[in-house]
Image 1 (cartoon, helix red, strand yellow):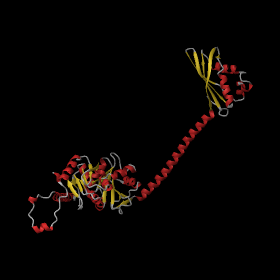
Image 2 (cartoon, helix red, strand yellow; image 1 turned 180 degrees about the vertical axis):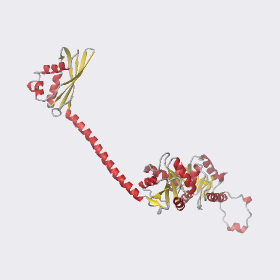
Image 3 (cartoon, one colour; image 1 turned 45 degrees about the vertical axis):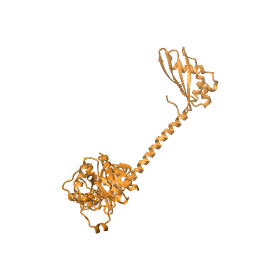
Image 4 (tube, one colour; image 1 turned 45 degrees about the horizontal axis):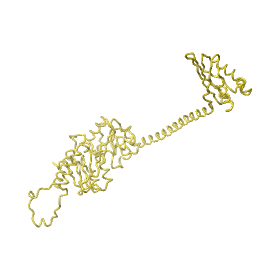
Length: 427
């Protein structure tokens, strides 16, 4: 039904039922015939149609089993009172054609309210479109500016012209990534001490830098990232390893995942031990292992002194001049450490203990250094991992007395205040 918007204020909607088969013309004729003279000249339906104050009567009928029912609608430009009077007049009709019939008005709809709702809904949709476009334009401008800044910040470093951030020379630490796009993505989030290797053939520039600075390798979580990582472990002096989430690439992960991956970086020795990676033929590797064994031998002497009957006799004057120290770790403590170490073996967990040997909490190994930094009452740590120089330095600063791990890593300087035990010491 087409309604003239210039003449319509209200819409009368009614249902009709008849006890026989009727047609549209029967319904229209009954309405005009049975309301004629009922409401006076002012509301005579024919006169109202001539003056365009009411529209055309629309009727839809359906006949089944010898009976008919349907709906009828009538648009009007009358006022509210006149419209409802006209609607009530429809219900006075009791016969259509030769059949008994009833008409029931279901609703007198204010068309302007409906239009107003349509206007509001459409306005909302248009506003959303405008806001979305404005937002997209703003983001595009910001992204364009950001990308332009990134391109300006990225440099070619060294003789091999490696893509790098502007802070490579000024920073004490560097992050090694795979390619130029990885560098751009890290620059996007303010990480400027980053350099790319550009593939599995690691440039000499990157190898030399790794020897001078604290080096974190940050590679993709796929097979390609693993291959590049293995080559870097062979030719470069890597300190920490970070991986993007599995199957994800550094160049496409968002800021949250980048920061999370770098925060959860793992020391080189611990990573190699976790994934059973063995590097052969790497210069300096045998030396590191040798240094580690020497440190372990030194600690064994320190923690497990010879029995008195095996020690050489000492002169009385020597005994008077020397201060006899009690063993730092008692047998009871050693047994407790060994029990804990066996319980957490293979779990990559760490147990923090207070000065009385009571457990404070159990945490993942990757959170160990951060937890020691935050805590003030940690006296001993037993963990399923490798004792590294960084861990010892942090433990020394936080007055941790004892560290118990699986084995000793590449430790150059052993703090005097921190005592270290490894799994071999309990065998």
